[in-house]
Length: 263
Image 1 (cartoon, helix red, strand yellow):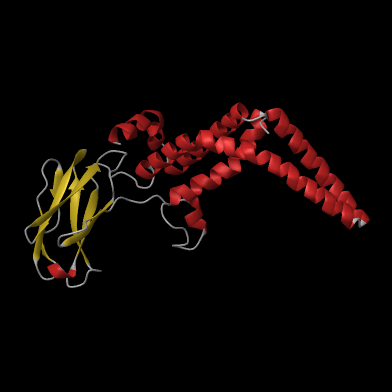
Image 2 (tube, rainbow, N blue to C red):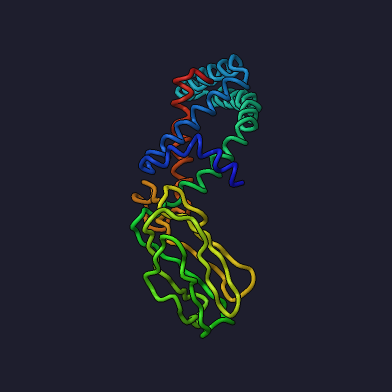
């Protein structure tokens, strides 16, 4: 999977050098034009153009029938419109079938690369750990990291009584670094791999099925979409980039169809 992600970085990694909002706009733009090109390639465009023209004419005739109060004509033409729309459904299925794998790869790349911002050299970040109740009151410690990471808080701490309470260590990246942060408690260790000082990140959160440590999390800054700036806090579930990307793609598909002349 790491190889596949690196392969996708070759084609999409340049987006990470841009402001995140612009990167997602460009990704949505590429997706909409890509899906439109697939639509032109795999569907009967002549049939779809004729169906679209029929729907436009039927809408005009329905409006005229409504003005004249001819309810029977309205019902007949609405039934005809439903039949014409059914003719278009196989085309939508063909597009989704061909585009599914590329869309899945783009979505996976985005989940790995767009949800969080990387930690720049010289910035501080936090490693947080939650513990199970069985470890309450015991000593735990973060193994002092090697390389350019500097630990800015006490390495040894006491596990709190509540599982909801977490312990936090503060670290600073003096230079680009990728390696393991090791947390130990009651003779058990967990490893959380981090990457700092680059545009890309590794998993922000890890859970552990057994042992005193239940979860660790690195405090990468999360992306906030324009939607979250307009809507009440917490209204959009994470990851926010997905909602912004999907909305932009849906808005751009009709534009790309018009530009490329696709039905």
